[in-house]
Length: 360
Image 1: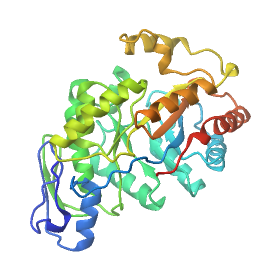
Image 2: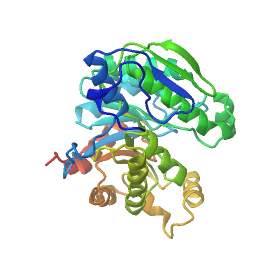
Image 3: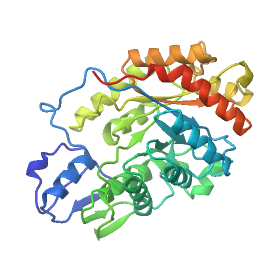
């Protein structure tokens, strides 16, 4: 992404982030547009930005793709997550599974809460109309008072999911990059033209425009790390070790610098799958097999899934030691009743929320 001085934005055309295709903004010289564009596209003056030595540590709760919370009971769990002072709630997407649609579920959660932030871990972009999606998310961000944390991905490597989204697996990456470029242009609130491989718009304006929407991406593969550096405002990988995160962050920072970008120091996070206690049962066999396949490089793949509250606290602390400050914890053995959920959340709050810190 090209870094731009927001006080010297041209009044005729603005070339935003690295694109698939050509995206140009129509004239709009007012200061509000300049400020909004600066926030949306995140240009950086590396000589002017102060880096906080220590950022806020925040911990949220995630629901995995196997969650059964897709009925009215979801609201009771949402209420508990907020009342216990967790920072955020994260929804996974799986068209062919029981997990609720993330956008609908987040909207429902936003209407019940006043402080809780909410995000997707992750929402699939390929197969969606980027303008419609941008409008939906901008509306949710504005109506919730800026509590949306959008996180996007290419989608799971599953043929049924690809069919559901109407996308060929080999087309996902290019679709993703172009669609995200279009979505950022939509969030600027300015008129823009875009002509790419899939999408074509002339003089399009999408309102309301959010004050700020930081895009989070995951992944640990080299291509995924490069994408984070080029396009993202934050990084939220999963099934990783602190060493993975430290090494990945160096790649991201290098790629970001090559594109005159910088990811803020408090925008490095990690999603941690865990087993809360003995009552939760063993790690599911399917997950065991998946860990071995996903990370054949690890002698002990169990370090990716801490078992017990003490192990989870220790894992979070080790991530903090390498500069990670935002966490999403996901119980791989989800409670089977609302009462069990409430007990689990109280135990989780007691175990991990004392690890939260303020910036210094």
